[in-house]
Length: 167
Image (spheres, rainbow, N blue to C red):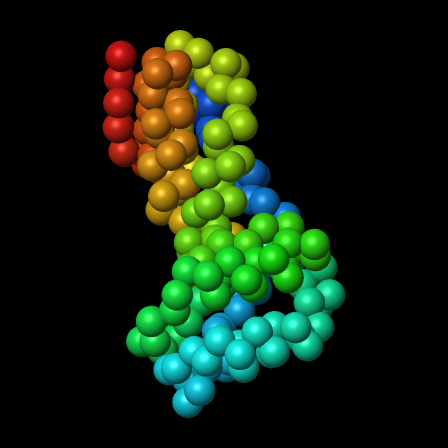
């Protein structure tokens, strides 16, 4: 006599939360300021303003833009602010930093708006693997959002999860 195989995971009340399902849709663009600097290091205000004035900003329509300088140049704050005045009418979002910083900020906005009431007093597993670039900060922010309401939090897959928190 063989016993019937029961899928305990499928029958459990465990709720899987996948951050990838909340990935903000839209193209991400890295705008490198170095191309607008003298020899990639010196910002000349007049030249910088002229380049900004004549640039085709419409190519950033509905895109998320990360303003970045790939050299060790010291970029004054007003330069990022000036570029943002040109980008804002077209882009969805402008940040200073790399693409991971951009994704972290986008996820922070998404997580902040999440209604987590459905997770109240329930065991939640935060799915770890994703095909999209989910930044580590998004996982941290999600835990901060879920911990006050969830009964327990785990990370990974239901078959091999790591316990994080239990009330």
